[in-house]
Image (tube, rainbow, N blue to C red; front, side, top):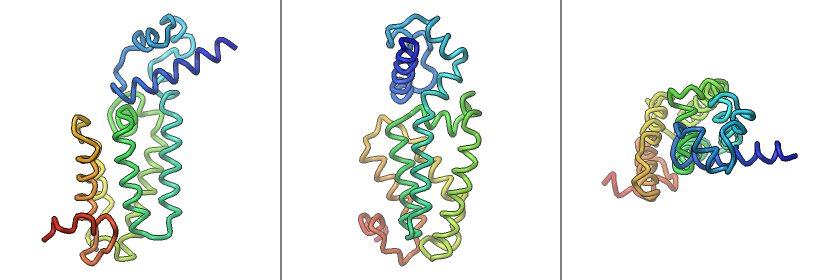
Length: 192
């Protein structure tokens, strides 16, 4: 019983620490914050990647659910723009998640299947939006990846409002000229 409580405590502490400070926080510091010895942490998570994987597994599952919700959205523009907005939300909430999913951190290998599935799903969203005329005809999945890269590289020292502004500007760049989506109407003055 104590072992399971310790494991859950370590995961919770690591999840919060990775979200705020990134994945390079030493395991010794996680042990200290959890009020446990480093040997206890290593008993549960022999390698650092084991701890990172356990700490981020729930968030990765949440991302999967978000993408599935976008795929299930019948409106192609809302589906694509919703996926981009969710990506930005995760960027704000969890620095470590982006490092693990999109960076070169060793823990990224544990999420390779998720990365491929997310990429295929994004491709379907872009194709659907293009076929419906919701995005410019020349928009490709690579264009959307560039947008996601801009969001991922956004410095968290800026405000959430600044990130939202970036997302809206990126979506305007993707939207078809005659798009009447709420996102493009909100700041259509930028185009005038």
